[in-house]
Amino acid sequence: MDISYSVKPIGRVRSDDGGFRLELDPAYRPAMAGLEGFGYLNILWWFSGCDDARSRENLVERSPYARGPERLGVFATRSPMRPNPLALSCAAVTRFDPKAGVIGLSYIDAEDGSPLLDLKPYTPSLDRVEDPPLPVWCAHWPRDVESSGDFPWEDEFNF
Image 1: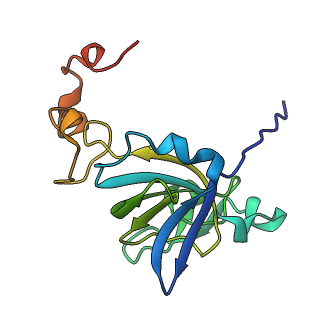
Image 2: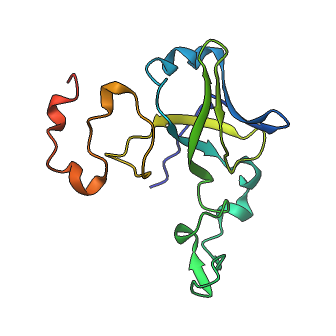
């Protein structure tokens, strides 16, 4: 069964003399509401430089890890050459300008102009960074996945 999907970029990743940043298209700037205060973001972007038939056929490659097996399946690596050239980066936020649709980042491993597909706030109850800054409204959430199982999540959402 061959199913095709469609994704719409919401902006671009920028990496230049101005540093690392996300630039959201004007239509998606309202979606930034409530994002201010998160110290880290999970950023889904497209490895556009590897969106070709040869790259998408790559399933096994020489290990990029010095102590890893000689050959690894692409799912065991962060290689851009994969069946679907999706990339996920967790990055620290350095500035937040919702009016301009700009989010500054400390670093992201994307090339300038890479299509930005989605953003999700980093929360240690679902993700893990030792001590990320968080807004007051979610600072009481569990600090790691291991302890989040007993947390009353039903009290944290409006559905």
